[in-house]
Length: 482
Image 1 (tube, rainbow, N blue to C red):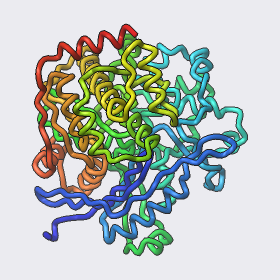
Image 2 (image 1 turned 90 degrees about the horizontal axis):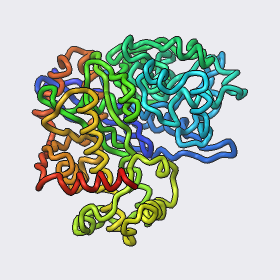
Image 3 (image 1 turned 90 degrees about the vertical axis):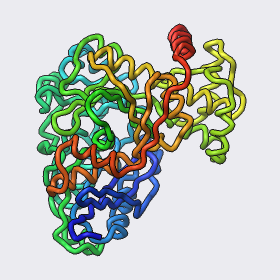
Image 4 (image 1 turned 30 degrees about the vertical axis):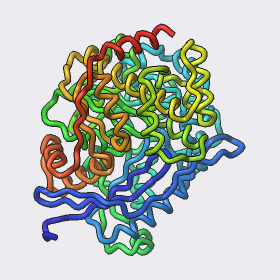
């Protein structure tokens, strides 16, 4: 391997597992490999649902040990959740899980002080009950928050433990509902009206900024030879994944698939209209001044929960059976909050079909087809709505992330959207993480250059739409009328 090739450790934390990937980047070359994977199992304690963040940190250290010599480390994870530190920098309890019930009914309290339309106009963030703003409002009178002197988002918390330095990376901060997407700075007026102390947050960092050096104790535990810098990346995993969309030009939509489906457009400026708010689109921040204009859809969480309920059957065989089930027999709203909590997912999907007067899926294959048809329908609507609201047309849909392995979902999305789908890369978040580190070290150029490198080096699959979209229009109308 050429001496010009450098190695970067990408810590990529998902809602069900974490992993450490090593990316190797050189002139015209890019490859990633997984060196360590570890579970991410939330724990239910008497106070509610919590993340085992100490277990995650242990997994990160083991992964860095397995990574071998690296030129930099970057960390990305899911959004909105955070850890609280006391005046000595010690963690005040395990971070609360975004699926915890503490934010039930909190939005109405927030809107009493800052009406929903004003909140959207100031922050551009779609309503989701677990947004950091609602979590902080729910925690307002707790002893833990009263004792806190610092709030760190999950990737920033882990970076702090690795380096001893504190910062708040911007792409993840933009999911708190406390950032103004026009100024790319804190929404001071919103925070003041809601009694949220922005001094809790560490200074903002941008992707590519230095985030410190691995502490001597970390070097000793991982066997790495210092100095090893930690580089701020797009620490919201969707920001890293969108950076790794191998698009050519600007007329594309993207769908980041995994536990969630995040479907939308990359824009130069936020869309803050009342119509956009009513359509529940969010304006999150991306690399190089971009805005990730997207809708959150429940995603493959629906199928993951069903697989768990069914005892983890062979997925390949199940998808083959689902492909033989008649299309669009039954569909559900894949964005319905009724599917947010874990447990009894097959029964809840059946109940939704029954309540809407549709045939009730009564086998795993039928439930799976219902889920995939419903996701494709939700992808269609999100892509259509995003184009209309932003006034920007698209010629192709890029699917990145874990859902690229699901050929049936990719084909159904092409059919539903009536547009070609390019699927890949699967490891989009890790690749985006690696490329930002490589760019900080001068190995790659601007965002279009990063995307050209991805298109040349990563395996991609193209799906052409089959038939017309009339039946998808009819299913969309049927679902809207239920």
